[in-house]
Amino acid sequence: MKKHNFGAGPSILPQEVFEQSAQACLDYNGIGLSLLEISHRSKEFTAILEESLALIKELLHVPDDYSILFLQGGANMQFNMIPYNILNDDETADFVETDIWSTRAEEETRLYGKTNIIASSKEANFNYIPKDFKVDEHATYLHLTSNNTIYGTEFFEDKQYAIPVVCDMSSDIFSRPVDISKYHLIYAGAQKNLGCAGITLIIIKNEWLGRSKRPKSKMWDYSIYAKNNSLYNTPPVFTIYTCLLTLRWLKKLGGLSEMENRNKAKAALLYAEIDRNPLFTGHAVPEDRSRMNINFVSTHPEDEEAFLEFVKPYGIHGIKGYRTVGGFRASCYNALPIESVQVLVDAMQAFEQSK
Ligand SMILES: *Cc1c(COP(=O)(O)O)cnc(C)c1O
Image (cartoon, rainbow, N blue to C red; front, side):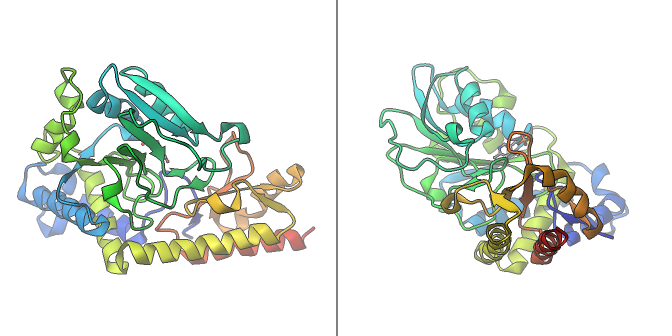
């Protein structure tokens, strides 16, 4: 039986993506060769790469003065690569600290320039999004993490700030329409909403390519990837193919507005049960609740282990919370059907009745 996969990442992808990518490993489009054994410069792979980039541009309405890049090394590598490429030694980046990912990004940035944490919700175990912060108008950029995968809070608005914005969208990219023009750089590891692990998507405003003055290593330089259409060296071809299949699925379903509606419906269903059921308590404050990662704890801590056991016969996978929050985290990424959320809600109700 296929389980209901609430894992935080790598995570569920559409079933047809699993099937079609498995088939491509055996025989890609009937050419008598596996996708895994053909050149990344073959006409087959070139077509995969071009269609992927075109679909990203189409689905996110990426303006023409931006480049779309596929890099390796995960979002964690971007914590370092962004300041290396953008920030000069004497310049400052502002950070809003909303989880450990923004903390890590800030730490890496200090290797190249100055940083300033202008707002943080750390004192409340990151259960809200700070809102009344003031950016330093002399800073080079503001760094945000749009969805806080571990703590379950999310920025839903693409706001205009006085300075350029860099945003880690690893866990909510493609979950809603985004106004790309409000950002100078967006980055996202693939393994939550886009495809299997192995690439990071970068969308960067062209005027920022080559911005920092330090001499750069080629593999570490955004402009090399932009010039070479992300083919400076061998890219992870299989990962990119899973991204293409996911993007085709997104388009077929109606694109990002439809995805947003579905994600809103799933989140509303689960949060309503968390709020109704006396055995559970939500972690994030209601106005900042993430649609992607829904965190909640047992009202009576001694129930926690029992509930994790209780859900097993329902085929529910991956709801154990991250150690710094405890309790439960139900990740409801794009590919998770609302039927799976309903199964979790049913289990929560049955658990209440079993008491
Ligand atoms: C998962 C995640 C990361 C880490 O990504 P890696 O690809 O493992 O480096 C960073 N930021 C956010 C918001 C995430 O959800």
